[in-house]
Amino acid sequence: MTTLVAMLLGVCSYESKGQIETMYSLYRFNPQIVTPAHVGSSEVSDITVINRRQWVGFEGAPTTFAASLNQKWGENKGIGVIALMDQAGPIKMTNISADFAYHVALNDKWTMSGGIRGGLANLAIEWSAIRLTHGGDDNFQEDISSGLKFNTGWGLRFSKGDGLFLSVSQPRVLKYDFGTASGAYKDVDYYYTMVGTKVRLGSQVTLYPSALFRIATDVPLSYDININSRIRERFDLGLSYRKSDSYGIRLGFQATKNLYAGYVYELPISAISKVTTQTHEIALRFTFKKKESVETK
Image 1 (cartoon, rainbow, N blue to C red):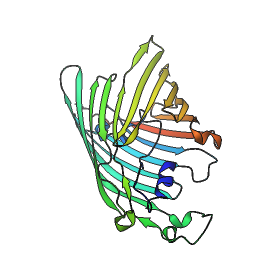
Image 2: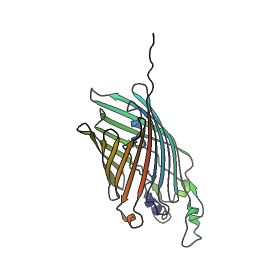
Image 3: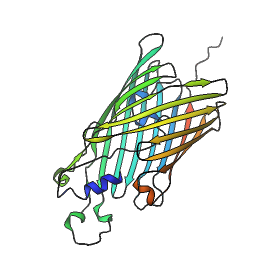
Image 4: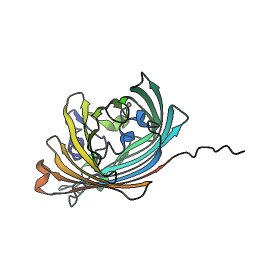
């Protein structure tokens, strides 16, 4: 996100491309943000809230807030809603969208899920909030906004029970456009590939290894590698690595039958580590299951 700020500063002199996708770590905890194919994929529904404060202590550092609803609908369908707010320096992105997914059993082991997304999004750049070394530049006097625009997304997911899975998605298809104010800036649309599985180590510990790849034209490949261990179905402890960016440690606790709390601490290893050494991400998830009707005589 901060790279985008630097790129946007030069849009008047040369063509540039920038990423404005939200960066967060608990994607396996809440894969709905990455792919709409996730909604309705399990027997329970949930409400999840995630707050991320990246590069704490660095002025203009990215902050993210996301809230989602994942609702199982009938036997093989799911619906969901996502509200997302992300800000990095002068760049602010707001998005609200609805998801629908359909799940089909391919055989007695594998299931295929397809999801679509539709919603409204806005990207704004507050040029007036930037403190310039030399004032008076007309390019930084007026804020610009893409306006509230429709956007869409899609996702495919193949899963084997509640263990092995592979998903491909494009959560945002349409590109942001500032009209005549865009200059030479070109938005980049990203594809996501996620893969993971589950490995039982006895009756007390289960491992959840996974990886997420971000792919876009003319942009270096970005990926996360994670391994999380669940102990006694109550405590979580995990490690993560993001390519050339950070190491992380994850903690989780099943506070009650329906409430789970998660936390990630990341240590930057890129050039930004010279000015900040911490990123924090916290999440809460409340799960619920539709009550089954009881027949009485």
